[in-house]
Image 1 (cartoon, one colour):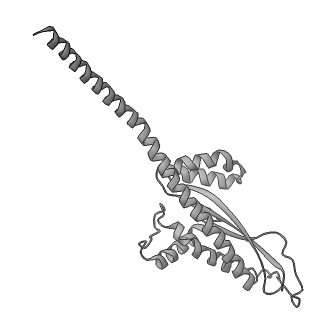
Image 2: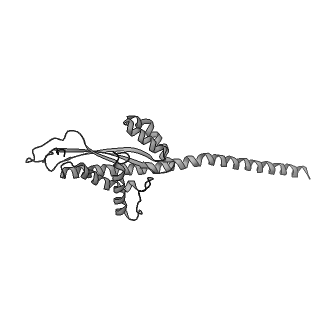
Image 3: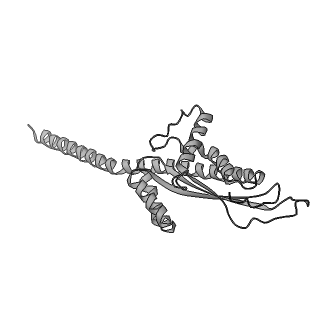
Length: 221
């Protein structure tokens, strides 16, 4: 073998080693970057669903206030109107025993979600939806232009985060800044649900509407 052939062979071996080293480096970088990119993608998807739920909650607050304006602030009727609006955000749920129809049956899915939300809310609002008449409800001159008093309704909805990996990360971020403001009993329940793999964050919305008649307090039975 000539000197030229030896030099050429040495260069070929070095080139092969360089290619292998670069390929190994690419694999390592991919192993680091791809999970991060996947998490960012899932987090963005979860944030989109979160924003959708916020918009629906605002509409649910409007529907609840409208129902309350027509029915003298009856909380049960207002909650029923709000639950039907928020029904699609409940399905699918990680809670056992809450079946949800397929997505191509939106009306049935909304009704099933509303019923599931009613069952979830039976324990006092977590997890689920609480509807409350807040603030002073003034009385106006119903015979004058503008009608009766104003009704202000507040909705607090515990949205279930459902996107894997992103749910735990976003929940921990919320917990660091928001959980401390919760009542102790609710905070314990929220953290217990998280330990079981179910992550919830609270969404709050208010809406004010003029009533069709002056508000009057209902006597307790």
